[in-house]
Image (tube, rainbow, N blue to C red):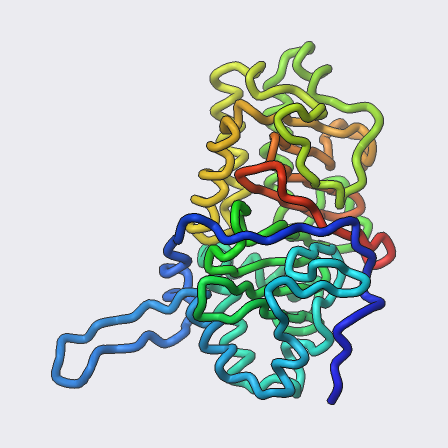
Length: 357
Protein backbone atom coordinates (compact mmCIF):
# COMPACT_ATOMS: atom_id res chain seq x y z
CA UNK A 1 0.00 0.00 0.00
CA UNK A 2 1.49 3.29 -1.08
CA UNK A 3 1.27 6.07 1.45
CA UNK A 4 1.33 9.65 0.21
CA UNK A 5 3.84 11.80 2.03
CA UNK A 6 2.84 15.20 0.70
CA UNK A 7 -0.03 17.51 0.20
CA UNK A 8 -3.55 18.37 1.08
CA UNK A 9 -3.55 18.16 4.88
CA UNK A 10 -3.15 21.84 5.91
CA UNK A 11 -1.34 25.03 5.09
CA UNK A 12 1.94 26.03 6.78
CA UNK A 13 2.52 29.45 8.28
CA UNK A 14 6.29 29.19 8.44
CA UNK A 15 8.98 26.74 9.35
CA UNK A 16 11.18 26.06 12.34
CA UNK A 17 14.79 25.00 12.18
CA UNK A 18 15.84 22.14 14.45
CA UNK A 19 18.88 21.93 16.64
CA UNK A 20 20.02 19.54 19.34
CA UNK A 21 19.56 20.46 22.93
CA UNK A 22 22.68 20.84 25.01
CA UNK A 23 21.33 18.76 27.85
CA UNK A 24 19.79 15.34 28.40
CA UNK A 25 16.97 14.51 30.73
CA UNK A 26 15.51 11.40 32.23
CA UNK A 27 12.00 11.10 30.86
CA UNK A 28 8.79 9.80 32.35
CA UNK A 29 10.00 6.74 34.23
CA UNK A 30 7.29 6.77 36.85
CA UNK A 31 4.59 7.42 34.25
CA UNK A 32 5.65 4.44 32.16
CA UNK A 33 5.80 2.17 35.18
CA UNK A 34 2.15 3.03 35.78
CA UNK A 35 1.17 2.40 32.16
CA UNK A 36 1.23 -1.36 32.38
CA UNK A 37 4.19 -1.84 30.06
CA UNK A 38 6.23 -4.78 31.42
CA UNK A 39 9.61 -4.10 32.97
CA UNK A 40 12.72 -6.11 32.15
CA UNK A 41 14.38 -8.09 34.92
CA UNK A 42 17.99 -9.05 35.46
CA UNK A 43 19.61 -12.33 34.50
CA UNK A 44 18.59 -15.53 36.22
CA UNK A 45 20.42 -16.12 39.46
CA UNK A 46 21.23 -12.46 39.96
CA UNK A 47 19.35 -9.94 42.03
CA UNK A 48 16.50 -8.67 39.81
CA UNK A 49 17.24 -5.34 38.20
CA UNK A 50 14.31 -3.48 36.74
CA UNK A 51 14.91 -1.42 33.64
CA UNK A 52 12.24 1.25 33.62
CA UNK A 53 10.96 1.89 30.13
CA UNK A 54 10.70 5.57 29.20
CA UNK A 55 8.63 6.78 26.26
CA UNK A 56 11.88 7.32 24.38
CA UNK A 57 13.01 3.71 24.79
CA UNK A 58 9.56 2.52 23.75
CA UNK A 59 9.84 4.60 20.58
CA UNK A 60 13.05 2.74 19.77
CA UNK A 61 11.32 -0.60 20.46
CA UNK A 62 8.40 0.44 18.25
CA UNK A 63 10.68 1.61 15.45
CA UNK A 64 12.51 -1.71 15.43
CA UNK A 65 9.22 -3.56 14.81
CA UNK A 66 8.31 -1.55 11.71
CA UNK A 67 8.31 -3.24 8.34
CA UNK A 68 9.75 -1.53 5.27
CA UNK A 69 6.24 -0.60 4.21
CA UNK A 70 5.42 0.89 7.61
CA UNK A 71 8.62 2.93 7.67
CA UNK A 72 7.76 4.38 4.27
CA UNK A 73 4.41 5.47 5.65
CA UNK A 74 5.27 6.95 9.06
CA UNK A 75 9.05 7.48 9.29
CA UNK A 76 10.86 10.53 7.98
CA UNK A 77 14.26 12.18 7.96
CA UNK A 78 14.83 14.62 10.82
CA UNK A 79 14.48 17.69 8.60
CA UNK A 80 11.83 16.32 6.24
CA UNK A 81 9.87 19.15 4.61
CA UNK A 82 6.32 18.42 3.46
CA UNK A 83 5.27 20.29 0.32
CA UNK A 84 2.22 21.87 1.93
CA UNK A 85 2.91 21.63 5.67
CA UNK A 86 6.54 22.68 5.91
CA UNK A 87 9.06 21.21 8.36
CA UNK A 88 6.76 18.40 9.37
CA UNK A 89 8.10 17.50 12.82
CA UNK A 90 7.42 21.07 14.00
CA UNK A 91 3.85 21.20 12.69
CA UNK A 92 0.93 21.82 15.03
CA UNK A 93 -2.79 21.76 14.18
CA UNK A 94 -6.04 21.39 16.05
CA UNK A 95 -7.61 18.78 13.77
CA UNK A 96 -5.28 16.62 11.70
CA UNK A 97 -3.43 13.42 11.01
CA UNK A 98 0.30 13.76 10.50
CA UNK A 99 0.30 10.52 8.48
CA UNK A 100 -2.58 8.58 6.91
CA UNK A 101 -2.70 5.28 8.86
CA UNK A 102 -4.75 5.34 12.06
CA UNK A 103 -3.24 3.63 15.09
CA UNK A 104 -6.27 1.39 15.53
CA UNK A 105 -6.21 -0.09 12.05
CA UNK A 106 -4.94 -3.16 10.31
CA UNK A 107 -1.86 -1.23 9.25
CA UNK A 108 -0.29 -1.72 12.69
CA UNK A 109 0.01 -4.92 14.72
CA UNK A 110 -1.53 -5.32 18.16
CA UNK A 111 1.98 -5.20 19.66
CA UNK A 112 2.72 -1.92 17.91
CA UNK A 113 -0.60 -0.44 19.03
CA UNK A 114 0.21 -1.43 22.61
CA UNK A 115 3.62 0.21 22.37
CA UNK A 116 2.05 3.43 21.07
CA UNK A 117 -0.35 3.45 24.01
CA UNK A 118 2.62 2.99 26.32
CA UNK A 119 4.40 5.94 24.71
CA UNK A 120 1.32 8.12 25.16
CA UNK A 121 0.93 7.04 28.79
CA UNK A 122 4.58 7.90 29.40
CA UNK A 123 4.27 11.38 27.89
CA UNK A 124 1.39 12.22 30.21
CA UNK A 125 0.97 12.14 33.98
CA UNK A 126 -0.45 8.89 35.42
CA UNK A 127 -2.83 10.85 37.64
CA UNK A 128 -4.44 12.20 34.50
CA UNK A 129 -5.00 8.84 32.77
CA UNK A 130 -8.81 8.79 33.23
CA UNK A 131 -9.20 12.37 32.08
CA UNK A 132 -7.05 11.84 28.99
CA UNK A 133 -9.12 8.76 28.17
CA UNK A 134 -12.33 10.75 28.58
CA UNK A 135 -11.02 13.39 26.18
CA UNK A 136 -10.03 10.74 23.65
CA UNK A 137 -13.36 8.90 23.96
CA UNK A 138 -15.33 12.10 23.45
CA UNK A 139 -13.24 13.53 20.61
CA UNK A 140 -12.02 10.58 18.52
CA UNK A 141 -13.82 7.53 19.91
CA UNK A 142 -10.96 6.28 22.07
CA UNK A 143 -7.20 5.99 21.96
CA UNK A 144 -5.88 5.19 18.50
CA UNK A 145 -9.06 5.89 16.59
CA UNK A 146 -8.49 8.63 14.03
CA UNK A 147 -5.08 9.14 15.64
CA UNK A 148 -1.81 9.06 13.73
CA UNK A 149 1.89 8.93 14.49
CA UNK A 150 5.13 9.92 12.81
CA UNK A 151 8.76 9.22 13.70
CA UNK A 152 11.52 11.61 12.68
CA UNK A 153 15.22 10.79 12.69
CA UNK A 154 16.40 7.45 14.03
CA UNK A 155 15.24 6.36 17.51
CA UNK A 156 18.10 5.20 19.68
CA UNK A 157 20.37 7.96 18.43
CA UNK A 158 20.67 11.52 19.72
CA UNK A 159 18.24 12.88 17.14
CA UNK A 160 14.69 11.57 16.88
CA UNK A 161 11.12 12.59 17.64
CA UNK A 162 7.80 10.79 17.93
CA UNK A 163 4.67 12.84 17.17
CA UNK A 164 1.11 11.82 18.06
CA UNK A 165 -1.52 13.80 16.14
CA UNK A 166 -5.30 13.79 15.86
CA UNK A 167 -8.29 15.99 16.37
CA UNK A 168 -7.65 17.95 19.57
CA UNK A 169 -4.16 16.60 20.19
CA UNK A 170 -0.58 17.19 19.12
CA UNK A 171 1.94 15.69 21.55
CA UNK A 172 5.65 14.92 21.17
CA UNK A 173 8.33 12.66 22.59
CA UNK A 174 11.82 13.60 21.45
CA UNK A 175 14.48 12.39 23.87
CA UNK A 176 15.54 16.04 24.06
CA UNK A 177 16.69 15.99 20.43
CA UNK A 178 15.05 19.28 19.47
CA UNK A 179 17.21 22.06 20.80
CA UNK A 180 15.85 24.87 22.98
CA UNK A 181 12.16 23.83 23.02
CA UNK A 182 10.01 22.31 25.75
CA UNK A 183 7.78 19.32 24.94
CA UNK A 184 9.90 18.70 21.83
CA UNK A 185 8.08 21.60 20.15
CA UNK A 186 4.64 23.25 20.29
CA UNK A 187 1.77 21.09 21.51
CA UNK A 188 -2.00 21.26 21.54
CA UNK A 189 -4.53 19.74 23.91
CA UNK A 190 -8.28 20.26 23.63
CA UNK A 191 -11.65 18.80 24.49
CA UNK A 192 -15.21 19.00 23.28
CA UNK A 193 -17.18 18.09 26.37
CA UNK A 194 -20.92 17.53 26.01
CA UNK A 195 -21.35 19.55 22.81
CA UNK A 196 -19.38 21.33 20.11
CA UNK A 197 -20.92 24.60 21.29
CA UNK A 198 -20.47 24.22 25.02
CA UNK A 199 -22.58 25.93 27.64
CA UNK A 200 -20.90 28.75 29.59
CA UNK A 201 -19.94 26.40 32.43
CA UNK A 202 -18.40 23.87 30.00
CA UNK A 203 -19.97 20.77 31.59
CA UNK A 204 -17.85 17.65 31.29
CA UNK A 205 -14.81 19.43 29.92
CA UNK A 206 -11.68 17.96 31.52
CA UNK A 207 -9.62 21.14 31.04
CA UNK A 208 -12.11 23.84 32.06
CA UNK A 209 -10.84 23.91 35.66
CA UNK A 210 -7.68 25.58 34.32
CA UNK A 211 -9.75 28.54 33.13
CA UNK A 212 -11.65 28.68 36.42
CA UNK A 213 -8.34 28.98 38.29
CA UNK A 214 -7.19 31.78 35.99
CA UNK A 215 -10.50 33.60 36.45
CA UNK A 216 -10.12 33.40 40.22
CA UNK A 217 -6.94 35.42 39.77
CA UNK A 218 -8.88 38.00 37.74
CA UNK A 219 -11.34 38.23 40.62
CA UNK A 220 -8.41 39.06 42.94
CA UNK A 221 -7.46 42.10 40.83
CA UNK A 222 -8.44 45.62 41.80
CA UNK A 223 -10.16 47.91 39.30
CA UNK A 224 -6.98 49.20 37.68
CA UNK A 225 -5.54 45.70 37.33
CA UNK A 226 -8.74 44.41 35.73
CA UNK A 227 -8.60 47.22 33.20
CA UNK A 228 -5.03 46.21 32.35
CA UNK A 229 -5.83 42.52 32.18
CA UNK A 230 -9.01 42.63 30.10
CA UNK A 231 -8.59 43.06 26.34
CA UNK A 232 -11.81 44.36 24.81
CA UNK A 233 -10.90 43.80 21.17
CA UNK A 234 -8.12 42.34 19.07
CA UNK A 235 -8.10 38.75 20.36
CA UNK A 236 -5.46 36.81 18.38
CA UNK A 237 -6.46 33.88 16.24
CA UNK A 238 -5.93 30.76 18.32
CA UNK A 239 -3.00 29.33 16.31
CA UNK A 240 -0.99 32.56 16.69
CA UNK A 241 1.38 31.39 19.39
CA UNK A 242 4.61 32.62 17.83
CA UNK A 243 7.12 34.26 20.17
CA UNK A 244 7.20 38.00 20.71
CA UNK A 245 10.72 38.15 22.12
CA UNK A 246 12.00 40.42 24.91
CA UNK A 247 10.64 43.50 23.14
CA UNK A 248 7.26 41.94 22.48
CA UNK A 249 4.11 44.00 22.90
CA UNK A 250 2.03 41.62 24.97
CA UNK A 251 -1.62 41.92 25.85
CA UNK A 252 -2.78 42.09 29.45
CA UNK A 253 -1.28 42.86 32.82
CA UNK A 254 2.43 42.30 33.55
CA UNK A 255 2.96 39.75 36.31
CA UNK A 256 5.35 42.28 37.86
CA UNK A 257 2.33 44.47 38.62
CA UNK A 258 0.63 41.77 40.67
CA UNK A 259 0.76 41.64 44.45
CA UNK A 260 2.55 38.86 46.31
CA UNK A 261 -0.63 36.85 46.87
CA UNK A 262 -1.65 37.33 43.25
CA UNK A 263 1.75 36.10 42.07
CA UNK A 264 1.38 33.09 44.30
CA UNK A 265 -1.96 32.32 42.69
CA UNK A 266 -0.43 32.85 39.24
CA UNK A 267 2.15 30.22 40.13
CA UNK A 268 -0.65 27.82 41.13
CA UNK A 269 -2.33 28.41 37.76
CA UNK A 270 0.92 27.52 35.98
CA UNK A 271 1.11 24.36 38.08
CA UNK A 272 -2.39 23.38 36.94
CA UNK A 273 -1.44 23.97 33.31
CA UNK A 274 1.54 21.64 33.66
CA UNK A 275 -0.28 18.99 35.67
CA UNK A 276 -1.44 16.75 32.77
CA UNK A 277 2.13 16.13 31.57
CA UNK A 278 5.08 14.01 32.73
CA UNK A 279 7.49 15.45 35.25
CA UNK A 280 10.42 15.82 32.86
CA UNK A 281 8.35 18.04 30.57
CA UNK A 282 7.15 20.09 33.54
CA UNK A 283 10.77 20.57 34.58
CA UNK A 284 11.75 21.57 31.07
CA UNK A 285 9.04 24.22 30.89
CA UNK A 286 10.24 25.59 34.21
CA UNK A 287 13.82 25.70 32.95
CA UNK A 288 12.83 27.47 29.72
CA UNK A 289 10.72 29.99 31.60
CA UNK A 290 13.52 30.69 34.06
CA UNK A 291 15.96 31.57 31.24
CA UNK A 292 13.68 34.42 30.15
CA UNK A 293 13.02 35.84 33.60
CA UNK A 294 10.35 33.50 34.96
CA UNK A 295 6.72 34.48 35.37
CA UNK A 296 7.83 38.05 36.07
CA UNK A 297 8.64 38.31 32.34
CA UNK A 298 5.08 37.32 31.41
CA UNK A 299 1.75 39.06 30.88
CA UNK A 300 -1.70 37.63 31.57
CA UNK A 301 -4.57 38.66 29.29
CA UNK A 302 -8.29 37.90 29.37
CA UNK A 303 -10.37 38.52 26.25
CA UNK A 304 -13.84 40.00 26.31
CA UNK A 305 -14.51 38.56 22.86
CA UNK A 306 -15.98 35.09 22.95
CA UNK A 307 -17.41 35.40 26.47
CA UNK A 308 -19.94 32.58 26.51
CA UNK A 309 -23.07 33.58 28.35
CA UNK A 310 -21.83 37.18 28.67
CA UNK A 311 -21.21 36.36 32.32
CA UNK A 312 -17.80 37.95 32.82
CA UNK A 313 -16.22 34.54 33.32
CA UNK A 314 -13.61 34.85 30.62
CA UNK A 315 -13.46 31.78 28.37
CA UNK A 316 -10.41 32.97 26.43
CA UNK A 317 -7.15 33.95 28.08
CA UNK A 318 -3.44 33.92 27.40
CA UNK A 319 -0.25 33.75 29.48
CA UNK A 320 2.67 35.05 27.44
CA UNK A 321 6.35 35.91 27.78
CA UNK A 322 9.31 36.43 25.43
CA UNK A 323 9.50 32.73 24.49
CA UNK A 324 6.43 31.38 26.27
CA UNK A 325 2.81 31.23 25.07
CA UNK A 326 0.00 29.29 26.75
CA UNK A 327 -3.20 30.25 24.92
CA UNK A 328 -6.49 28.94 26.29
CA UNK A 329 -9.37 29.33 23.83
CA UNK A 330 -12.68 28.38 25.42
CA UNK A 331 -15.18 29.15 22.66
CA UNK A 332 -16.97 27.15 21.31
CA UNK A 333 -15.10 24.51 23.33
CA UNK A 334 -11.61 24.24 24.76
CA UNK A 335 -8.48 24.40 22.60
CA UNK A 336 -5.15 25.07 24.30
CA UNK A 337 -2.11 25.96 22.18
CA UNK A 338 1.28 25.79 23.90
CA UNK A 339 4.65 27.01 22.67
CA UNK A 340 7.60 27.18 25.09
CA UNK A 341 11.34 27.57 24.48
CA UNK A 342 14.42 29.10 26.03
CA UNK A 343 14.90 31.48 23.08
CA UNK A 344 12.41 33.46 20.99
CA UNK A 345 14.32 32.61 17.80
CA UNK A 346 12.31 29.41 17.25
CA UNK A 347 9.86 29.89 14.38
CA UNK A 348 6.30 28.59 14.41
CA UNK A 349 4.63 26.19 11.96
CA UNK A 350 0.95 26.17 12.90
CA UNK A 351 -2.43 25.86 11.23
CA UNK A 352 -5.94 26.24 12.63
CA UNK A 353 -8.73 24.22 11.04
CA UNK A 354 -11.78 26.38 11.70
CA UNK A 355 -14.06 23.86 9.95
CA UNK A 356 -12.99 20.82 11.94
CA UNK A 357 -12.89 22.75 15.25
